[in-house]
Length: 145
Ligand SMILES: [Zn+2]
Ligand SMILES: [Zn+2]
Image (cartoon, rainbow, N blue to C red):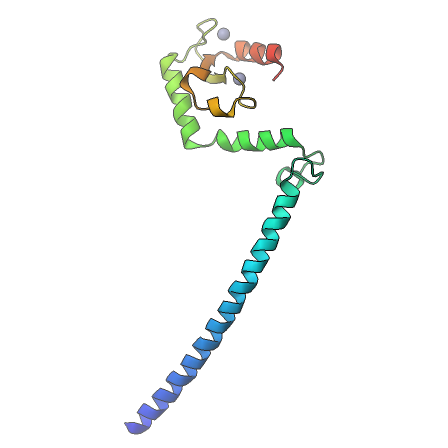
């Protein structure tokens, strides 16, 4: 039994040492990754600048990454969001799923003041209206958005 105890404690010590080593490594790793993170953040900031020619390239896989590309990116994600869905549903319900120009049934919700230029009104119930495909296209054609 004492032998076992000794063996056991030796094992424990070895384990403790191993743990400590690992902890030490983890600590160094952390420090390193913190630095790496800072670098990454710095790099990220560098490439996300509007005026940086690299902006959007990685994100969109397009050569001409520009500010407009950024909008498309935001819009695509925004339109998948829960809040947007709720906003859309509310407008569809209010407008009875029918085009506000001709009354045709539709489920297209249009931003009266553009999504791009009025980010604060993206979820404003007064800034949405249901339009049929035809009138929606007409709106965008007229406003050139
Ligand atoms: Zn629209
Ligand atoms: Zn219509």
